[in-house]
Image (tube, rainbow, N blue to C red; front, top):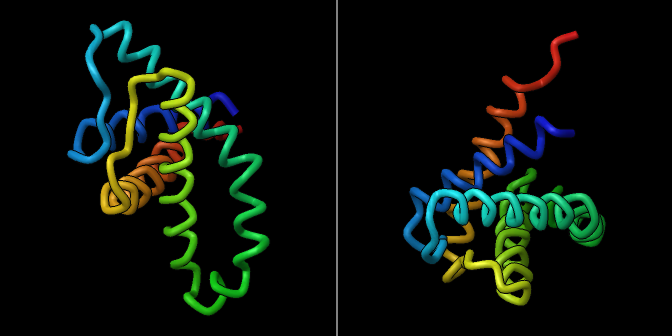
Length: 122
């Protein structure tokens, strides 16, 4: 579980750094690290509670698109994370749907790669 959290935090940090539409305002290194931890926690809670509900109700679309609709769901999770972080006063924001779609792809790939390498091999 900790490895998954670290992988999500690293993926969100990379998306924030690489994608112009995903922004974090101000602060020093410590403030940015705390912000990313909060964002990763919100994202993790949404992925464990809300994402399964989305998948359940869009199961037919996921099947018809051969799983590509999960990318749309992941973009929704990023946008929802942005909304919640804004309401919590966390200085992290996704500006538009284009950034959310690209960010969702990047976060999914990086999380999968890091989760695969950080997984306990015992």
